[in-house]
Amino acid sequence: MVRENITGERQYISAGTGYYKEEKVKIGEKGKTMIRIITMLVIIAVLSGSFSTPVRADEAEGSEEIGLNYTEKTIYVGKKFKLVLNNAPKKIKWWLSSDTNVATVENGVVVGVGAGECKIKAKCNDIKYTCKVTVVEPYISVKDDYMRIGNTMKAKVKGDKVEKFSSSSPRIASVDDDGVITANKTGMATITASCKSGKSYSVTIHVYEKIKIIENPTFDDLAPTTHMTFEELVGDSGESGYPKACPSPDTYKIIVDLYWRVVMVYTKDSNGKYTIPVRYMLCTVGKSSTPTRQGTFKMKSTKVRFGHFNVGGNAQYWSLITSATYFHSILYDTLGDANSWTRTSWNNLGNAVSHGCVRLPVPDARWIYYNAAPGTEVTIRAGSSKDTETKAIREQLKLAEAPDVRPTLKKGKIPWTDNWTIEEVPQEVEYVYYPQGSGK
Image (cartoon, rainbow, N blue to C red; front, side, top):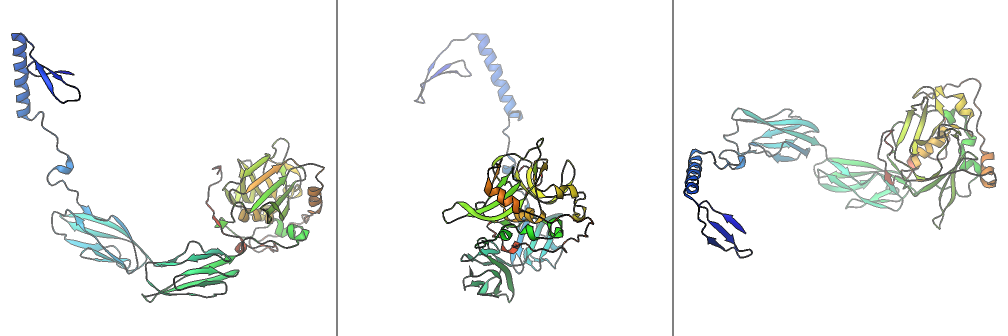
């Protein structure tokens, strides 16, 4: 490699050695004069500071950042931590708490007094510095407050030291000295931790079976809507919000038969096959111009308690199958008002008139809302007139007729005779909310 130095000499660098040899190259007097001028200009520039080396801000004298060691901090009631003003140029003038019922401060030591939020301030050199402090009560930490019979789970206390654990009903859920809870029987039990601070903290545990399977079920057991009153089939339970959790996605398989307009739910037998019937439902499916999409799908996460259609109308207990295809109840004219049920929608249960969704009586839509987890397999099939088994199910799905005079339906005051409760639903998969229209 060749380079030329300031005097016009060429330097040959030997690759890989770091050594070089010089070769004199003759230049004229004018060239030498130009070199001398350039050299003088460089010297002058250096002396005048034009080429001075920049200094990093963090290397400059006195450039260390001044600030508290915490700008936000969360502590438990009774706990404390130390605030320090790093690189303070002078002695801190004062410390101050914006709410001494939440936290106090003395010489930078912050103590949690009660649950809440406050600001701890320090003043130094006429400048104020602030730390946001959140104080929380100690509590029992458990993985979940629902347990299946036979399972165990460990309880811990956050923010305090435990002296002993106890259970209000050891037959349902017992707890040992280390906080290990054992689920023994269906029901509810309160687990209490007594702590060295003199305080106690509790959590209620719900114990359930895996799923409720009725042995040798009758048709009424599998299709409870067939013996329900009209008020129960179209009314509003008064519940709000979303499921906290659902059974695992492989608990059930749902089949929608478009020919017979029947929904059938199955769970696994001892061989892992979906052969055990759980629930039969009469449904409305898509009309020829807006057919219900066929195929096998994994249910999405979106659920809507009482929602509105873009094309008009409202419905209860939406559960997204795929794309814009939902399970949901019959239709209502007014959002949130079960008294506005539409006679046409009710009378069309069992027909093909929807925009593609699968309409159901309210108790059936509610069952899917709470029991069918995201990921549950749904098969929507064309069906066949030759399917005598599904035909037999359809012929027995007889529901109450709509009365000529509209009954008054008070939210949460209608009869509920379904054969399951929300408390019995296995809480195996936490439900994650996604808004309607998200496609998830």
